[in-house]
Length: 125
Figure 1 (cartoon, rainbow, N blue to C red):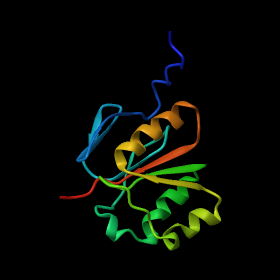
Figure 2: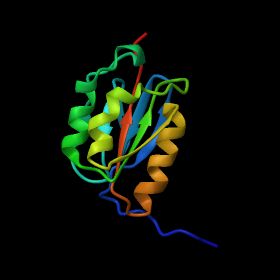
Figure 3: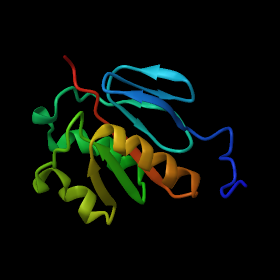
Figure 4: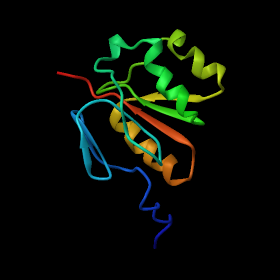
């Protein structure tokens, strides 16, 4: 018995992930990305959690999601609150988890029709 409808084929769905890459609609990305259910998948010029800056979240703010699912890399890391001030001020929700959990959560929320943004950190070696 099927309990959930199939997501629209046109939606950006995480189809596979690993610690070194993420596939969206079977297209492989080996660098950090920002993705929403619809629209272009954008490169996110972040390669290490420890190098995050407030400016790294400006592209996210411009997209005006209701909720951000932040994949912080192989391990769970919480960004400094000062980095998120603009998102908080814009009343954009923000959840942090390791990137693999973030991929799964993004897919669930996206399939529910939520205005979610996935910010997935792929850490450079």
